[in-house]
Length: 234
Image (cartoon, rainbow, N blue to C red; front, side, top):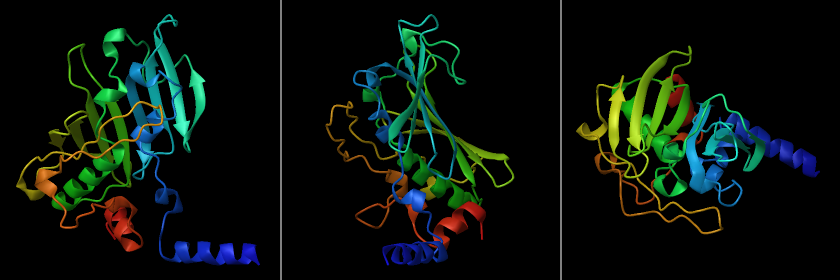
């Protein structure tokens, strides 16, 4: 009886076009919280590929002073660390000056996905996948989120750069039109170390793209044809 009921419910979700995996998305800040205690302070780079908009895996590279090249990579998937190794395809070496630290990452990936959709709608383009990269160039440089937008044919159609701390949109290559006519600020959060403390939303709002709703929902996870229309254009 239970199996039949479950199958019926799953069928309803499928017929409505709902992606069940997107119902409980794994964001970048949530992935950081899965790291072993103390490792979040050593983060130097975060990578994810083929997010729709949420990626299956987050690759978090930290500085390991015990390693010859200073590299240690954690792979987080499904809310847990699934791999821990002293090698990474994203970084051959990591220096102490490369370290960002979780306290400087206050823009989460779901906010980036929301921003990307707004640019896509303003420019009337359809996005199939997102690649995420977070790093800084130079010891005193500002950590930046780099989001690469890819269409259904695997072609890059846009690239958005956002400061990881203040949420300022630095550039939006490939997107000539700006939502609301200005760059805006992405909503940020207070970053928390993986010690059980909660992140709290700050009062910073996306000034250029203010939603009329008092509770800004993740537009990528809307049910039915809203999600399909954004990613495929149909």
